Image 1 (cartoon, helix red, strand yellow):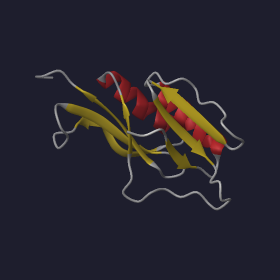
Image 2 (tube, helix red, strand yellow):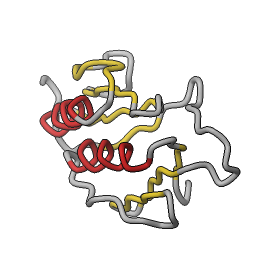
Image 3 (cartoon, rainbow, N blue to C red):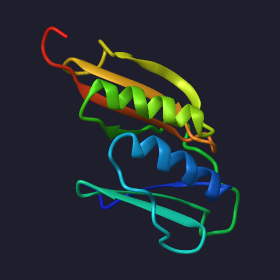
Amino acid sequence: MFTHIMVGSNDVDKSKQFYDAALGALGVPEGQAFRPGSAFYSHNGGAFGVGTPANGEEACYANGGTIGFQAETKEQVDAFHAAGLANGGSDEGAPGKRPQAPGNAYGAYLRDPDGNKICSFCQLPEGA
């Protein structure tokens, strides 16, 4: 469906620290430099980048936008949330079951250091 997702940052080093920790909890390898002022993450055929805007203007977050990262387990969702909070992120929805989401969803939401809204979700076994 997509080739990659990219979000802007005004402090790429701080953002890389945040994403290395939060995405690392999901099994995603550490981000790699793509061009000066950016880091890219590749995992299971998907790519995610964070970097300074190419036009040289201030980065800002998308109002209403959310980027979701897949987790295999509830424990990974919990670790994603904790790692993000410990590395400059802010809580946007604590880990827990999400009855409004399809299936038996368990997820957590964060804001990265620049205000971008991200989440991680997994599907729990029936009855869990």
